[in-house]
Length: 369
Image (cartoon, rainbow, N blue to C red; front, side, top):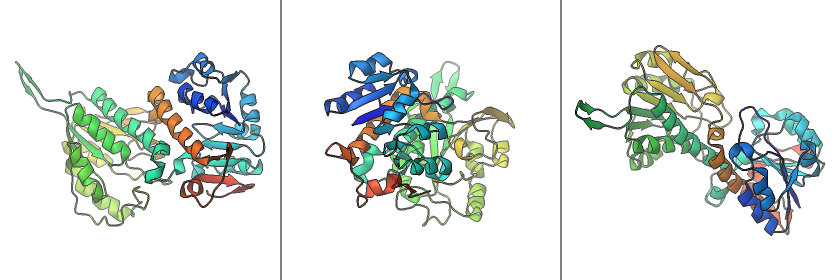
């Protein structure tokens, strides 16, 4: 079986789907690995590291796509790239089916077996494959570091000859994987951390990381789906939530927002009114910027100052930590591919919960959008 890895073409994308360490495992198992020249360079993995581990380097990008039995990628292919895949090949990547119907139609037309890494279910036996959690963990860490860097105050308390400097106050909205990592990192940096999530079940996790869980008197029984993700609420819920959070946001030096609902526009949690109430020099780091943002004033991919508050609209955060992001994603995607393989070939077992959840196109059809 020929496993192929192209170079990611998206603007600002530095990750690679397979690192040399993982290549060696596939080669040892009897597979051939073809890597596009320069695919791992931006993440810190030069071509010579791949060749040392048994991979072949392809100078022509179309060769990678046309020869692949299984193509491993980070982001969805472009329409042009999808058209290069040979009929009957398999593709594994973040596909985001709800956003890429045109690409899925091309894949289906070419009878490509495609699997979405963003659809890995959050169940125990899929933990090693859970790329969304891997990337979210890195994003949460980076958000806390960015907040500490951009804030005009230091995070930890400090006793000096000039007097005591109080710790910065950080308020984290959303206590999923990214939020919990942001909490842990901000706490390690010495900040006083508070956090809120509509799912009361995460209170214990938040407190175990040294933060105070903010309790709002809201009805949240239906706040979590069976996969552990937050469920979308109606606008009345969000409006009440915003009113109750006003003073917590105003008291914070840095606000980190991480609230995402899969497949939906991010809910507005921090309004312009809240930003106006924050002290001059405060910071809002919005990890939901790519889905519209949790802050009403967020501009995706930009850092803007509004009402004397810096608002950082972070996009593709894992790419800024490309070395570690590639390490983690490579291990996730390798674990998933090994799950699919039987006797050296991909076995589409639709009775398996993981396979069924991730299979997007097969037999010339789109199975989920």
